[in-house]
Image 1 (spheres, one colour):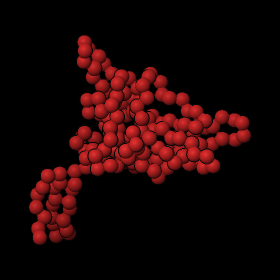
Image 2 (image 1 turned 90 degrees about the vertical axis):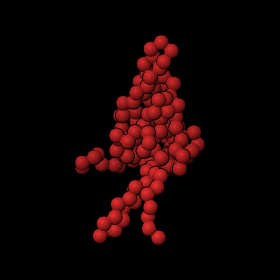
Image 3 (image 1 turned 180 degrees about the vertical axis):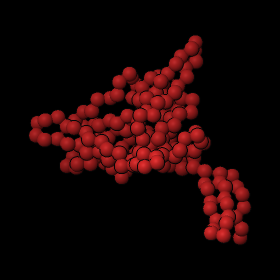
Image 4 (image 1 turned 120 degrees about the vertical axis):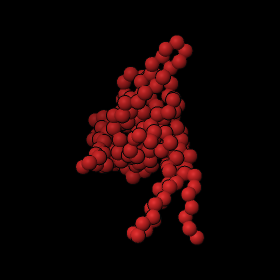
Length: 169
């Protein structure tokens, strides 16, 4: 059986073997951007996020994991931020629930005792007449680790770190 050209993939063959390149569902959003973990992508008013991990967990959007075969998206409605939201789980150092959300407003959401936030992108909105156009400014990307630290009656502190090297490093 020989490999034949098809929809959604390309291939090349050489004496070393065959290379099959499968188009990922999220690649149609913006092929000019490298596929980097947790990289937000905007198409009109919908944001999707390239799969990645937070504390080795794939985040979800609205209950659907971002690595689903049909990636979930977020509808933006004005200025705000695309953020990772972690929720505290009792008796653990590493939060185990990760969600990607849109937070409307001119500032990033504040961490609380039970929720920590990390901005991935700033959503800008420009309205001319009845038409609103959106743009994204990428603030961060990569696979992340986050610890929630709390000592006694002091407030909780959410400590974030990226574990993905920058391109070219």
